[in-house]
Image (cartoon, rainbow, N blue to C red; front, side, top):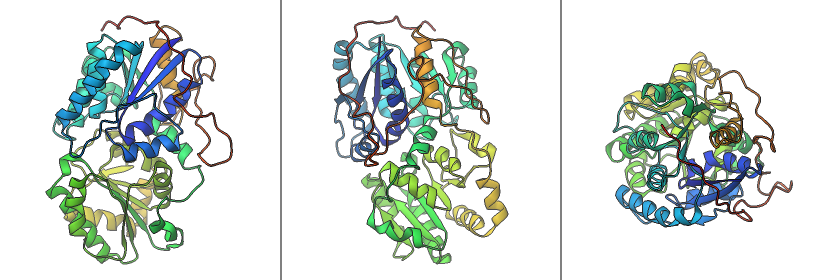
Length: 427
């Protein structure tokens, strides 16, 4: 048995590791330890509840207006105490958060191999997104196994001289999670949205929170939304607002008073997926939503100047619009009124996944640890067979909470410890 420690701290990380956690638990080859840093607290807890995950260790590190340096120091210190006693064979991190970077560094300091889920995303600009672009480049230097979501991400790694033998294209696990969430029962999760199903006009879903957009860029976004609300009275604009006070202080004042703008607290993941499925157009600066929206056939306008997900732009499912109202407003209105333009985006092929990524991740971990065959990489538009549970892990998610279908119980209880260790892979 091989001990895998999965470290996560934010809502996007939890969404993307949840299918992997559920898959690894089905395979007797693995002994799983889940660690939550709680870099996000409330939004993280929402996701954990939906996927029925109870972390084995909760570092509960969130403090008001915490700095990047403070977060990094806290995680390094806490994991520095935990890793020697837990003695995992491998640490799995996801994405490009401060949690993922600090956990990778802590594992490296203890000579424990790191597997990087969603590896290889790049914008080429170390300041955009900030600090994520730097985080993911640094994680790549510390990782022994690179789990790239797309062939383009794998190509980025190979261009940086990462050995090909350590790169596996898995597809993105967010598609696994999304496919489960949109089939779950329930409403949007906020009474302010109860009448959305009866709304006959178009719906624009907006999410904004990127650190590089704090201040004037977010104020410009607010101005653009106010202009859209005034110009399109039949349009319903829904904004699940990030809890960071810096985001709220910048975005809210320019919105003004418009009856067709609805601002709600962050929705749980299942409710947010239902909202994505209901809306007509998505305006966002989120990385994950750039992948999720196209999977539901929704045009996605990205309020950034660069993106580490160029596959969507190339495929035509997403478009960069920045934060300038003179760009945002006409782009949204074009999609609302030009049916051909809408269909070109909505009907494009999604390049990000087929819902089987978690099985490939588990198989790649088994192969890396010397306990399974090589993994056939994900190719957009073609799904390869994924071995079923009990051989090399397959993919299954829990029944939706409250669905009455039973489920497999909480994650985080009854794990067996293992003292087996493998040497750090030589690069």
